[in-house]
Image (cartoon, rainbow, N blue to C red; front, top):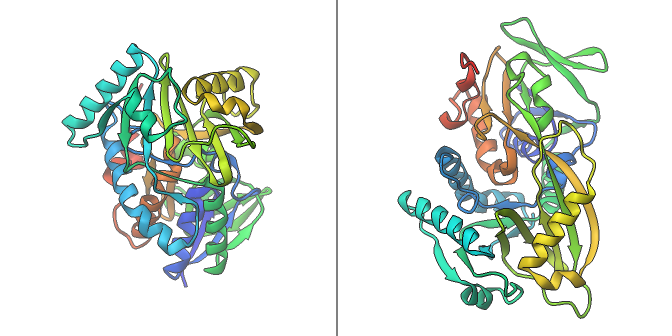
Length: 366
């Protein structure tokens, strides 16, 4: 039986480990705190269209293809918190609406139409949306998932498929320049012949070929809970532009809401800031005024793994036996099915996705 060592147990590492074990590999996952980090504090949006931006067409294509695979992925996994109600995008002012109109026109040019709605039409869909919202978009195909339910389901499925978990941190992948020989754990080399790096924002320090390609991008989120007498929460994910600032509100079962997300580049800082909480509540309340009566249950921060062009790194970047699946940025939940399928292909000797090839930066100078 062929053996695979996976470094990192976030949504990407767990998805790849589960799928590899089901395909007959003997899989060991190394992570001091499985199912934590940015995966634990994610909003859970599966939203390639409403995340689309001019200049990121390749990322849009990856996201749309992965979203197509999500129903089958969820069916294989079992109950995992998948939500299919769709997404609406709201704009509070003329400038915000003009920006959404530009995004809608861009998507239309790419053959991905969305429905433009007035503020009144948005409120018919989601009565929780307030009067400050002047218009927006409906994107029924953009879905969401409860990130914590998903992580729990992946851990159960991985364990049931025979995946072994070792609660240790890896310092580096060890090789002789030609082939991987192991991973450095607690100062000791643990033998390994095939290693998959899925360590998120920490991936860049694990091998020289990843140095400088993955950076931490901090994001703060809030978790709210509906209280008796408060206005009912939205059924759909609500994304919005509020005076040019993006904010999102993602429903959870039993009246829960996740509000996010700030975006700052401050290294590996994961402290929640007063300003971040203030900004998220201010902008979310502009869109959904009723949340002022909700309970604030949690404030947390995570580190998205960013890359120079915002596309993930999925492939074989260097010595034989080294694979990477990292750098998913804000799209880790969305891209999990595609990434897991791509890693299975890599393990069979097939090429990875061209748009995510980790060698695309080799020879590029600043």
